Image (cartoon, rainbow, N blue to C red):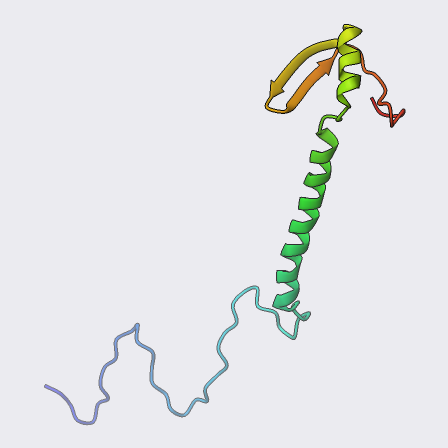
Length: 114
């Protein structure tokens, strides 16, 4: 039976209820800064960086693509190279003729490029 003067038993894993103790601050976990840290960058600056990076890469790849394009020459220049037996291979498709020369020849309008 129960004794009315005796306090009720509590299980060992349940916290003891004490109303006379003031509430303490919660514990901090590791990694949480103790004070005010450095201010974070705003979200719009991060979103602005993505289009800038995309435009930079697009410009770089476009420039590289234009540098690899074959040089256009006039048909009369092409015929002169065929007559000089300087054409190694030819590919014709529609109104376009592409080919590779055996020896590089300077372009008529740009003497520094072959």
